[in-house]
Length: 107
Image 1 (tube, rainbow, N blue to C red):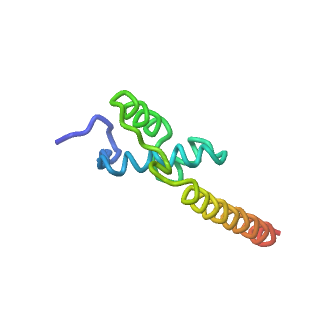
Image 2 (cartoon, one colour):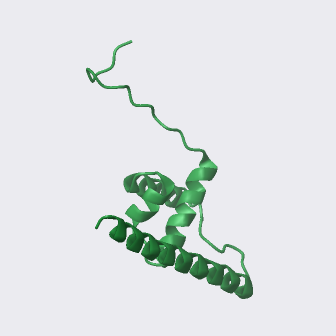
């Protein structure tokens, strides 16, 4: 079997489960609420931003409601959001430390 591109490896199409897509769309909503871009979420998940956008549109067209905190009480939502804020702070602090480390290494 020959590929259209001469001299390059054939691309393998990745398949994603319905559950993965739903979780990805949920994460997009969650991460966008705290200021992350679609590109950042895509990099985090290893998925192109246009793919995430398409999945979200498809789910909205079908009336699938996928969002963080579905069925949560206010107390549960508050706990979840506090955990999320703490995780984001840890990630930010780690990124700062890594930037300092690599800046020192490049001298």
